[in-house]
Each structure stands twice: as C-alpha cells, then as structure tokens.
Length: 108
Image (cartoon, rainbow, N blue to C red; front, side):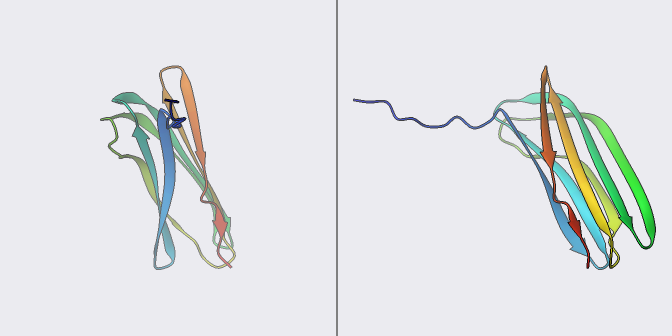
C-alpha cells in the first residue's frame, strides 16, 4: 500500500488580524506552533494620513502550548479618510525567523 503524501504544517504560523472600531482599527498579532514554543516577537505598525503619521513598535517574549493560539501584540490606530498603514509581525523561535505581513490598507 502506498503512503499518503500528507503535507506537514509549518512549525510556526503567524497571522495579523484587524477589527474596525468606529474611526479606529485594532490590530492583533497571533502565533500558533505545532509544539510548545518559546521565542521573541516584533510587532511593527506604520500609519500615515492627513492627521499625521505614527510608528508603533512592540517587542517581547512569548511562550505557547502546542496548537494553542497566542496573542503577541495589539495596538489601535486611527484611520481617518486618506490614511494608509502597514503592519509586520516577526517571530523568532530558536534559530528560525518567521515573518508575517499585512493586513495593510488604505481608508478612502
């Protein structure tokens, strides 16, 4: 009998989610690991628009249990008409680095 080719999921998966709250946007960084994991994260947001610009940088350490999602950063930014933003999440576990980009966007 032939073995099935079942893809193995990545060791670490990172995502960035957003939630609209009135004229603001709440951004969250998430990480999930196949195994218990400890590491560092960097959560960077750049926003520019008619009301001005902002750069938010968060970093720290995290630990997570296998297959349990951990929130590793969050921030709220104003997104007035004409504003745009960029979000990056970088996860470091051992000697591996994982980058997670977006959601980026513009408010028109």
